[in-house]
Image 1 (cartoon, one colour):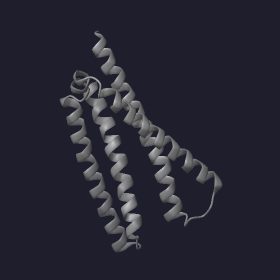
Image 2 (tube, rainbow, N blue to C red):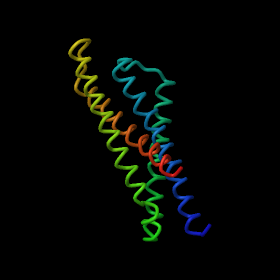
Image 3 (cartoon, rainbow, N blue to C red):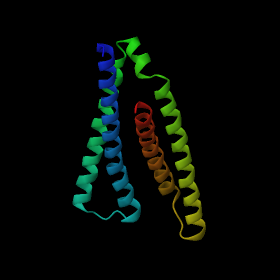
Length: 150
């Protein structure tokens, strides 16, 4: 196995690890924020606030690490081409398609809930849709990219 192949595998492993960490942090931060704002009616639970802030910190650290990986790639065009090959692009397209489907299903559920069960505010609907969009896009990419690397 050549040096370039080892570099690519290490970068792919880093990307998957930090995308997973980023998604977990985002789910904790934004999920608890949405629950606190719309389900618990802004009740103050210091433990939830602490967990929410920890999730936000994890999300930011993951985001910076992903950006750092991108900076590492800028130095070698051959690594960029191999790292972002056709299988990665296919995984990205599949994850966007999955994310669009999940967001559309979320919108349908919001419409049904608002029509037949209870009124949902527009801000809550937007925030819920963004949450589903982000988590399904990242999760879909992790799933499809793992599937293509197997």
